[in-house]
Image 1 (cartoon, one colour):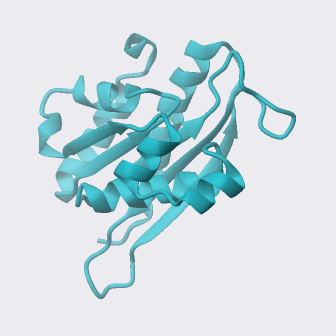
Image 2 (spheres, rainbow, N blue to C red):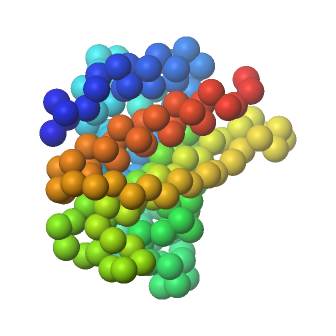
Length: 172
């Protein structure tokens, strides 16, 4: 699976975070730890990679990331509010600069008319310096095509790209 992902992208993430002296934690659902595995396949990942949590079930999202019961009940695990809470939760629980979250439907079952298989939400949360009011969280919705492995690989690549784009937007 990891061999399907371009090595340039995780290397750029590594260089960006390392150069900025920033740290990352990831909270993954449908990718089951593939983002963490992709990043830690790069030598020296311990310079910036703090933790990876695979929070597949509702209770794991609540227990480890402080995702609210209300968000899960109202919107479901595959939703913008839950992806945002996951990104903020992993950022804050792991006390890192960046939190990255993924929640989605990789299939082949589980899709609905409003959330078909391939629906993925990617969240990113930044912890700016105290009193700078620069902290933020953002979420993107994506619709990927293909089988389970293809959807998961596309999700990992897009999540790393989203993280890099967010890093580029932060003034340091």
